Length: 194
Image 1 (spheres, rainbow, N blue to C red):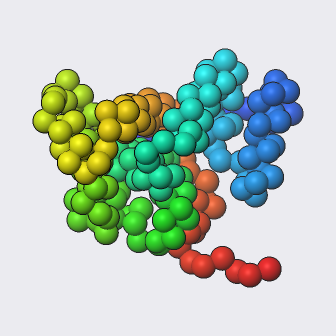
Image 2: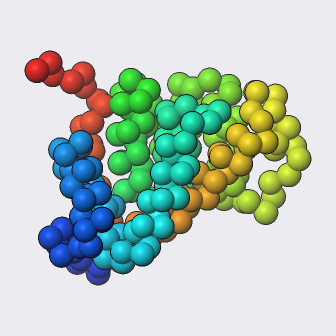
Image 3: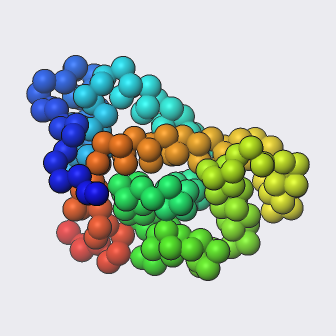
């Protein structure tokens, strides 16, 4: 059964608290559009603030993972969780970071067959296990990461991103959050020179 009407309509930007409105307008200025996740979550300001504070702590902090690797985790685990919004939106970001128009589609379909390094495959094996069978994560999983140079802190980061986006995936699915049309083309073709 498909839902045809948005159960949780997005609020108007003008009616939002000042800090949230400013954050959204900043994103719009940078991206050229407002990603739907910002407006969808803005309907509950306290949750919006908490969500994006944790998102930024995970995704913007310098650590043993590149920006592209963090997005690989999001795309691969979001595909397992059948989250259209996160696969499409973060797939666009991944294509841009990796300068590879094929990578997001490959990871969303079967990361084991994607054009990635053995290190990245080990990272995604761990992330996907956290996303699907976290109770089964054991010493052997940490050892497999260590063989590819990942520390226990890196494992925490990989697991935290997988877990955070499991929340995001479920809320996107619950709220019928659809990807902005702009995401579909991003990173697929070279940018036109201005």
